[in-house]
Length: 174
Image (cartoon, rainbow, N blue to C red; front, side, top):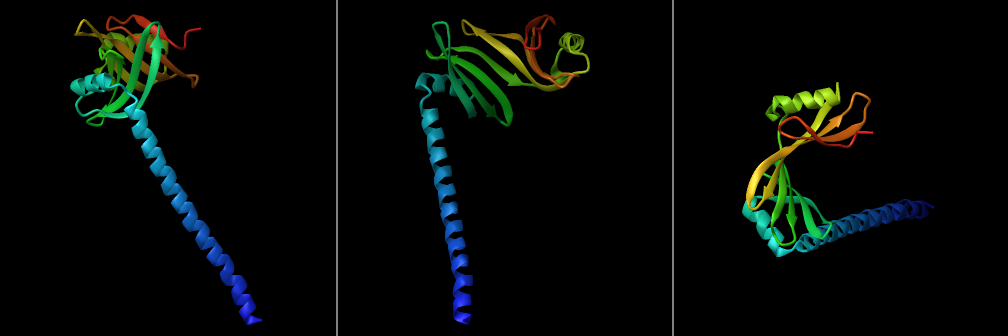
């Protein structure tokens, strides 16, 4: 009787151990496949686009990217970090930069931009601020500031404000 009880107690333990080992191996396999897919996905970015990104941002660590089409133009919207700072870049398939963005602190916003945001969304909290640099004919110019806010009524909105304080885009506008 004791041998039979011992077998019934040991068998579930062995089964449980096998299950744990199998799950661990499956998790490792899934993680490895995921890493391979990420590398393959990065390899889908054209070399000319990657060369442009690395020339402008040599330490770029790509976090996410998408391919979009605006009219006849194919754009690669690339989100990345460089030296722990968040950036985004829109690069055309021919390798030319359309614009790039850099995350900045609220203290870096011009006073007129702060006033526009406060006037448009009183009591809103700043969530993220990106400085937008437009690139045309190889020249960069400050286009504005893309600001993600939590409004007083708990909605998330995005507003883009020009350096002169005028509103360029407003996702919360009715």
